[in-house]
Amino acid sequence: MSARKIIIDTDPGQDDAVAILLALASPDEIELLGITAVAGNVPLALTARNARIVCELAGRPDIPVYAGCERPLGRPLVTAEHVHGETGLNGPMLPDPTMPLQQEHAVDFIIRTLREQEAGSVTLCPLGPLTNIAMAFAKAPDIVDRVARIVLMGGAYFEVGNITPSAEFNIYVDPQAADIVFKSGSDITVMPLDVTHKALVTKARNDAFRALGTPVGRAVAEMTDFFERFDREKYHSDGAPLHDPCVTAWLIRPDLFHGRRVNVEIETVSELTMGMTVADWWGVTDRPANALFIGDVDADGFFNLLTERLGRL
Image (tube, rainbow, N blue to C red):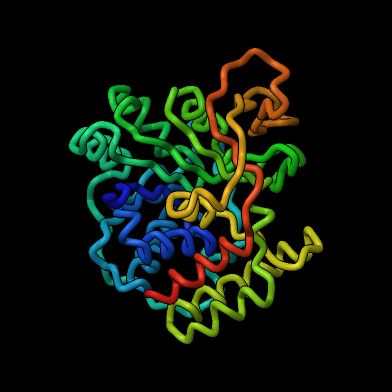
């Protein structure tokens, strides 16, 4: 079976970085066509920079990186330096990138790629706010039917919110964009907090990254050393959730995950619940299912996969 062609749309972020590394370490399953940066965890200039830093860390300066939207569709940008640090990649000391940022806008790259590649052959993997994807769909509606699948990290149901009492960060930052994507008719797989909060980087798991003895292994360990201090204090858990790598892990080993097809609507009106992912988990409405909403993961299998693949870089 040939590798799945993907575009990673991202706002790195330490966990975004690990998701990118996992994709680059898995060429038999994943062909990364390019990375598109969006404003989210930190402003666009930093997310575009961080994506290139991660590519160079993996020894893949050939991966094209494109800068996209610098603000949400209709709201002021909210960022998360309080979690990820002022650079978004606080923790390891990594050099500035030398690979160039592509001149083409990320939205135009997404549109061009979906038009040039065979219909149904490209999967979109958003790891941050959905601004770039929504803009591409709005600018070129013809590409929506050409998307194989969207696999995204965002939202929550049982775990409610991590940036407000009712909303997960990625969806909250640009709920209007999320609404466009969830109403697009695309085949969507969602990695919400409900599953990512079960993928905890415990001390033993982080020690396994560090024990790889490679620049990648040490950098990943230092990244999670940094951002886990926030999550441990907030959730009183045994480690920090490793959110975004769930997306790339699902592409490689979907058998590690379990969920159900449900209807997901995005709250875009009420400030009290702005950005809430209203998932009809119990099927109490007649709204048609529009997403595979993941709720569980084999955490040991997930971290075994992640550690083994990172060891290849």
